[in-house]
Length: 91
Image (cartoon, rainbow, N blue to C red):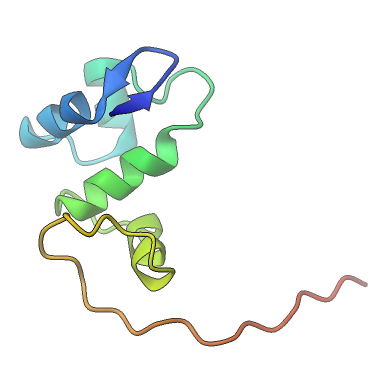
């Protein structure tokens, strides 16, 4: 599956960068250019980093809480589901 449409970078390419030692989105970008154009793929890159233990990632933890995490991903952190959220008040 493609992660970065701007540079035609696949999930496998991002995982290869992680396996090679990249542990931040910036390091992924240096290796394969993913995340350097429109930026819409950066959250997926962060999630992949979190899923593969390269770096704790708030986006990956949030995906688990919301039930959006990849069910095939190994060793997902055990996180309690989020309770109801209060609406935002704008003054």
